Image 1 (cartoon, rainbow, N blue to C red):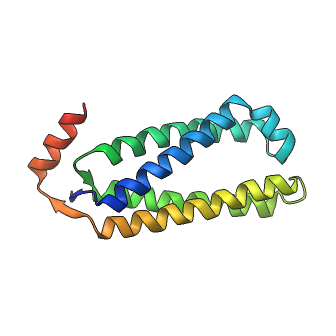
Image 2 (spheres, rainbow, N blue to C red; image 1 turned 90 degrees about the horizontal axis):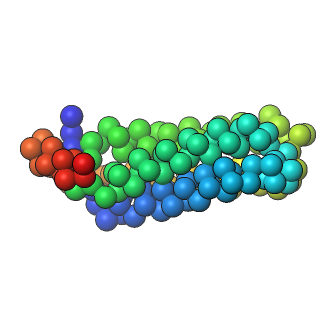
Length: 144
């Protein structure tokens, strides 16, 4: 597996993505009924995606703070963000008649944000430097 020392851009975009995802998770988990009322999104969707976002944010923080990270994990984050954006667009389109304008905006804003994160992360990945397997092992042990 190829390991990288994350570039400053990659660390920054992972951290900003984690902050945004964590904030959204808190909002969706602490006030799902209020958000559902204003957006038209189902409470179950808000809670389940909130749990997923909380776990994702924790994972991003771990990667952003590591001295070395597997290239494959960063690629997975980029693809995952593009998938999240696609899912938001599909939901906004499919549920358009059930959602309020705020609900459509909520989903489309998320789509735009995660595409920006994915772009920054892909660029940050290209700017990252390779490290040896031994260095990567030490970096992950330091985090434990």
